[in-house]
Length: 244
Length: 244
DNA sequence: ATATTGGATGTGTGATCACATATCTAATAT
DNA sequence: ATATTAGATATGTGATCACACATCCAATAT
Image 1 (tube, each protein chain N blue to C red):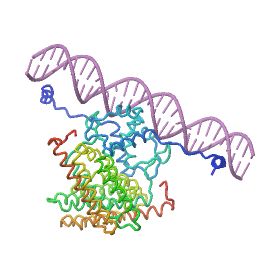
Image 2 (image 1 turned 30 degrees about the horizontal axis):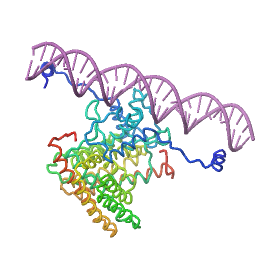
Image 3 (image 1 turned 120 degrees about the vertical axis):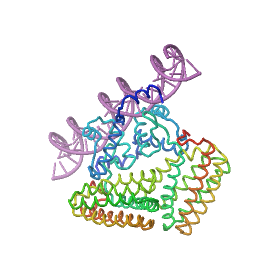
């Protein structure tokens, strides 16, 4: 360590300042917005428009959008057209299959991890939070709790690289799931069912039953998927490339 | 169709021109370079430097690099520092695990697909090409053939979304695998072994034996991984964040 | 000898401008 | 009525500039 650095470190107690770049903050903001359902599937977006809303210039937004395009959360719908990834039934079905592979694998690993009592406590807390949110019809909180539950589990079983890929998949399907909030009854039923299945997940992890943990997580993914699919079948028409 | 458009379409026979954007071509170029081993793991890169080599300005490179950062092929090694993702033993091990899950799954599906005679022919051809490339010590061709073999298989079994994720993983580990060419003897042995295992893959697919196909692909991934790991253990030191 | 300083260089970052062009609306022509 | 045209508007794209700041290297001070 430098002597100058040492001198200042010992005498003052200054806390580090935020040195993150604007584009990074824009990216995180857009990412969170996608997961929280601030955007609709297929919704047209514009760089300048986002820049204005976020209170910055186009440049940082351009780079953030480029990253989100690479993650398939945003796509180019024409030569000079950007939009949130739309809901396409067959595409979404495929993502669900991949999610079942990866999240099932992560759940398996979480179930076989030693010393999982703190994990189980955390999972119970998240599931309880979802149930309570549903009582008071706070769908946003339920959505957030569900996400917290799943990622708590995957963090326990997955290494960072696996978690990273799963996050990308959630980012892609985020707007699709979140926009089902428009049908409050359906959305409530999805999570009512989810709370029950989550209990099975917790039990499986507590028993260290790898196969059961994978089965339960896959059931959770598939059953919510079926509801979502029904929602879109009822809402939009039969178009293959719908804008919503 | 428009009447004006129809008139021109019927009279002239003009072929469409390339309307892809510069940043898209830059991205594809960098992507190919990563897979072909034009970059070393951990190698420092600069936006302006790449722009000059590619004969364009910084702007398109910035966007392409942003996309590659999102895909974890390039990373920021400091406040104003970019580099190719370095080889980190534990990280690489994790990527291998994810690859085994996803590529094993794709192989399973390819094995259970109906009408796979054309697939088997194509796989045989790719494997033969690898063997012939090794005869004449053409490591580049062997590397390309290996990639062609794997993606032929995954394209047959995977839907586009699965293929997309697998591609991203190959992009991340591309420079790591390709740079093992520096040890010609080792590299040759990896692929000699690979050709044999590929035969097992082909046999499994021909027999429509899902489990065997998954096993064979996973063996291929794991065994080449072990060689790579040994290569890096011998070459670089014991650093946890090596620049090569 | 060792630590510090100071300037030069190169870097990513952000802002701004110019441009081609897709999209829309209203006027015009067929 | 329908198809075409013309103009206005908004968009992504690419180039360029200014800037803060790591990094390196030589000069200087301790």
